[in-house]
Length: 274
Image (cartoon, rainbow, N blue to C red):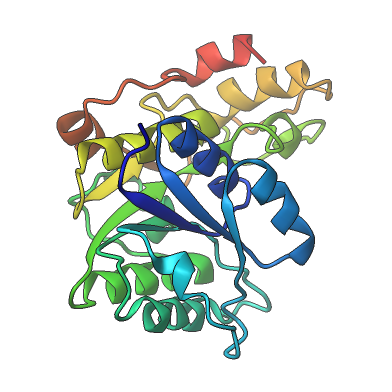
């Protein structure tokens, strides 16, 4: 029997679409949005109730049915151009206006560990964000706006560097030479675990917290990217054996509140399966 709760996913892209498919297998009713008309049929074919929603357009037609869900996952990234925050925050504000008076009570905001700069230290959910990039600043502003909205419980899920289908880490440095900062630790997470953590939050109703989605181990750039580049068919990159700016993103809340077991708990073991 399908579960009564409905989930709406604002942004069925690289992460949102496979998340929607997994939630359907778990028995949830799923609404999904896209900004591309041609993708509507593809969403419908997966059992998703599909909606065309472009938050950059203030004249969006009535899509109140899309928000007829208890949980809303906001899963679209900022598109940064010319060093500016663009229209990302206005899009979040537009979404909040559309949420008003809807059935949505829980928001899961897909954020990023880019809210932390490279401060040569470890950071976890209790650390104070200090973004250095325009993208990180925009995302942190969105986090704070959502968390301060009355009537909503916002869960912030900060993913580290995303890898998986269509995001092969082997292409990042494949064939490059004298890549700086070779000893810097990497902070990555595979799509499978992005989906697993999000589903666990929903299944356990573990809302209202900040979570860091990041694989627990942090090999150096040269130790990870050299073999994964070769596996992907590229020439082995060479790195400068140095440690400059870095950070290690840790998650205290995922093991504490979710009891989640990573599908890809070791990046070095993941290389062997590529």
